[in-house]
Amino acid sequence: MSARPEQLSAAQARRVALAAQGFTDRRHATPTLRTFDRVLRRTGLLQIDSVNVLQRAHYMPLYARMGAYDVGMLDRAASRAPRRVVEYWAHEAAYVPVELWPLMELRRTAWRERYAREGIGVERPDLVRRVLAEVADRGAVTSREIDEGAPRRKDHWGWNWSDTKRALEMLMRTGELAVAGRTVSFERRYDLPERVLPAAVLAAPVPDEADAVRELVRRAARSHGVGSTACLADYFRLRIAPTARAVAELVEAGELRPVRVRGWEAPTYLHHEAALPRRVAARTLLSPFDPVVWFRPRAEALFDFHYRIEIYVPADQRVHGYYVLPFLLGDRVVGRVDLKADRGADGGAGRLLVHAAFAEPGAPADTAEQLAATLDDLTAWLGLARVRVGDRGDLAPALAAVVGAAAGRGERRG
Image (cartoon, rainbow, N blue to C red; front, side, top):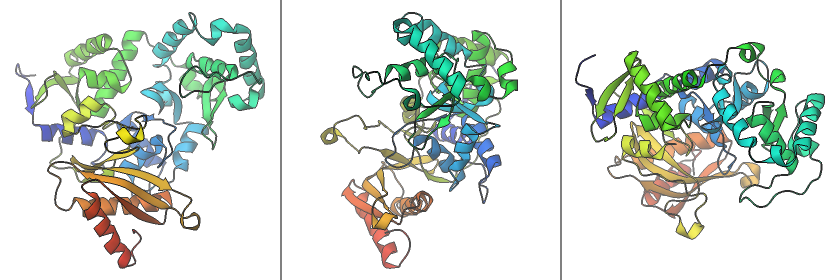
């Protein structure tokens, strides 16, 4: 390794990052579980979110990289033996490869320490024991199925949990239960870990915290391609200090290489297997919870793209909209669209509603055409009939014109 760090331009860093995330992999004509496995190796995990205004967040990164696929593929991977993924707290709630279960012991330990001081385990240990015994007896269940009818808490905005649900969540976070899957209404189904995870995973040695952090940072670096210590820490929501120690160890081992990215202030590291393609030919929409953009400072550094999700912002104060997806074209984010799947329209076939469309500075002249084609693909995958474009945003008129012209020719969109 040379004494002086390598240098990357901002464009090169973008291409490295997108290649690491799978955007240069050749798409399979029909995505299969082999395709799924390849994408999961790239992303490392799939963040879960309950918002279903378009499509639930964990399905979207797969679509962005695989194209149209059967969402049942992920459901099967998460809920049927032999499971490929299990739900746990990684980067928020996420599907992670089952082999990460032993590494997550560092998080389960933290939860145990917290619940020893506060929470339902302190308030009602008898209930926690009864809930665990009932799951052991009945098998995979939701909180609704075993709720004892206790009043639901209303002292935390956004939650409405009974004490039974709180007990189940505690037991899941501390590792005494695992998530066996989700119901069609998105409720967690809880079961004993030995009935959820492969025996080999449960029998695997549990690393100490330093080894677990190093492995998680290694995986984050592989998925990022290039990133700062803050980028690598955010991927699995690790603390900065242990992440920095792991980075130093991986640099010493030759797995990470210090580089300079023009325009980035923080020290940056390149994974030793990272590819630098000459070009990236992506054309897709990114979920707000896609690994490419979920750490907003990184998205701004990579793409010069200031991005904030506005779901919790009052409607009259939103800048871009409720559920806004960045539009990735080539190796740049060239626009953003506020989308909703209106599944009740057109006799059940539904519409993809584009409430707003905005172009980013320097967006190419054909952005509206490229976005219209992308929305057409998304519409077909979601099983909707057509696209309807609203009038908000500087890109909306051009996009509406392209969609309208397609409708006049009798094509799907419009």
